Amino acid sequence: MELVNIFIKSAFIENLALSYFLGMCSYLAVSKTVKTAFGLGLAVIFVLGITMPINWLINTVLLSENGIFGTDLTFLRFILFIAVIASMVQLVEMVVEKYSPALYNSLGIFLPLITVNCAILGGSLFMVSKEYNFTESVAFGLGGGFGWFLAIVAIAAIREKIKYSNVPPALRGLGMAFLLTGLMGMAFMGLMGIDPAAF
Amino acid sequence: MADTAVVEKKRTISFGKKERKLLTDPINDDNPITVQVLGICSALAVTTGMKNALVMAIAVIFVCIFSNAITSMFRKSIPKQVRMIVQLIIIASLVTIVELVLKAYAFESYKQLSVFIGLIITNCIVMGRLEAFAMANRPYESALDGLGNGIGYGIILIIVAFFREFFGKGEIYGAKIIGASAEYAINTTESTLFGWYQSNNLMVLFPSAMFVIAILIWAHRAWNPKLVDVS
Image 1: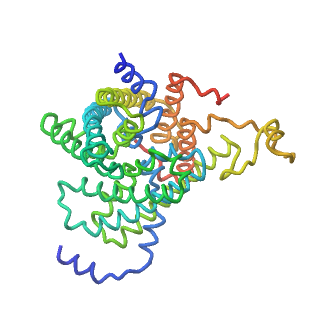
Image 2 (image 1 turned 180 degrees about the horizontal axis):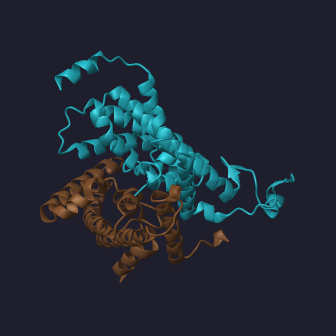
Image 3 (image 1 turned 180 degrees about the vertical axis):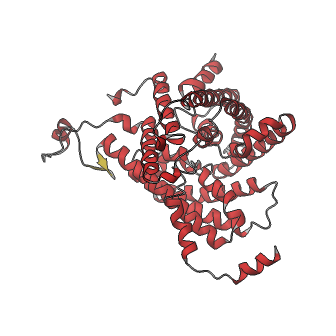
């Protein structure tokens, strides 16, 4: 039950994209059509689900004071985390290229950019600061990825519709995407329970 | 290839028109946030106050300059297949330096920025400029490009932070400017002309950053119509 709780919490209440605004660059750039958004979302779920437990192992076994080296090596955290993420993304890139060339072509430059998708590294850093154990970190990774997937597919669907609306020229495209994301973020804040200090 | 190498050697380090363009382009026509859509996450997260925005801007400018320069020095010896990992390790080392320096000399900001210092690594501006510029240019130009993009990013960060801090807390750089009169009666003895403003806490929450940047993009594109998205 605890794990289901963490999954639901990380997917909806603490949505990485709409509550913490992580991974915004690819979120805004790849959300023009639902199809590419869907592909990128799936890739993010996969990469988050894999890197989170690996980074958990690295953090507890290698870097912590009780690990095999016996000293506090947490200052190496950034470098090791990002190396794990970069190699996992390289792996995903090769798999997608082999099995779905169409998806590979439509994702274009944004597949390697999953490496610099802050949602992935941010997820790992949150996992450390929330002190999850191994299974919890798996649930957190999958839940966070699922939440990000939902958010990007939702905004892509809205942007596909809004193409037919009469938006002021200077606001077209990027500006509108920002406004929509802000509104979606407010909607998701309802799930969090708005901070009483806001009134 | 050999020809360009010779030409490259002849060019001396100077600050002419081309170099100035490297610096000013990212501030207006090629702004990292409003035009290239890079580095949004940190722009949203750290702009609740101008102090944090300033610290973040300085950190990003530092990382941008040095990662661009270092990558550019090694650009001919980095194998293409593993270039991402090499670039990320360069960036991660620089960010670790920034983190340790902040921890030692600006502990308050370090605590408030928390995860987002680590997230400079995945700030797409740094990575994007390495891919787009530093891998193909000399260290000197790359450093200038890094400086320009860092400044372009920092300016937007500080503008957004100004609006959010002013309307969200009634403060500018931590100093109270406007506020509700009841609040003034408690905190200060002096009366003020601006005692009527009840600060709007929504401005401190995340969605407002989206709205402020959207309005900035709107204004920027209305003022500079060649940036308008035609698609």
